Image (cartoon, rainbow, N blue to C red; front, top):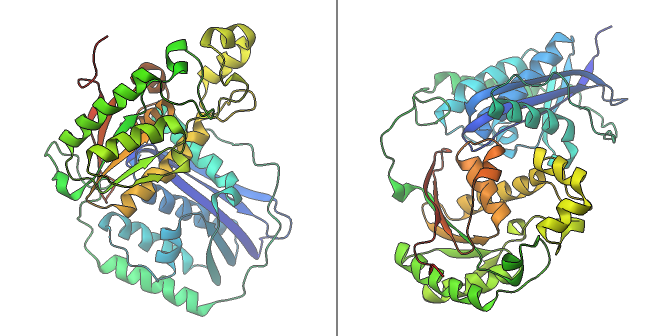
Length: 406
């Protein structure tokens, strides 16, 4: 017997925006939370928004195949939800055909209601999407299944037939179908070697903090608030002069809240004429848990199995610590927020080795092996341009010309 009402949860994303991408969709029984269908697929290169639309389309197609008549579609993409409800315009030409396809599917049901949910309530679809992204980055097919989260969201009542919502969906389809589909969305436009104008991009000057006593002693330094050493303070001053020469006009200096970063950020802000330093918790270093303050050799000796597992997968955390997958998620959130807050401007970002490596990995659409092959010096500078349509250009990696060789 076909279900009358189903819940569709969908998500999508990319490693780099644009980069290796994937989506996931789950169809549930609203009464029991039982999974009725799963869909996921890797996409070679796409933006986050394209992947999110592809996830919604796959979920609606699965619901139609099950014979459902009503759907509650839940996504953690505010953009897709607002555009499908007709409240936001579809500005990027590359999204218009996808919105039209989704709207056409909506019209096949008696009722569809769209709602935004936080990512933690979309964990199953998010897991499918992340597995597909990992597969895309590794050049293999997406895994067939992802273990669902242990906690199933309590069932929610799905609204009855909603002719107004269906009318909005048809309106979205009409607008999308009538719009030109040739544009600058990198997910749909041909690749090009032509340089892009930097003045339209948000430029991020990524600075690793100066040295601390733990740096010289080769210790894991995560959430512990270890201040700069004397050498680190000298590095911060040299870095400040270099940044001021690179970017005389800076909109903001944003820093991890730990003192080794804020000390470095304050030196840079002073060289820029007193730009205020804004703290951003999402830029803090990885939590190394039980390994905090231990030397690399001590950890290798006392936790050999755990270290091997940690080095083999970004999804594995140190004992009582945080995985690089989790660090990457909050770093993406921080970078997205900076691009929204400072369009077309230059922002200095002072952070730690792990967050900066992860930001550069995503920017270069690289695999996880990149994290172990890239070396970032204390007080090194990397420069990254990000355009509103998802375009990315990495201009400098680990510039240390301003530091003394001793």
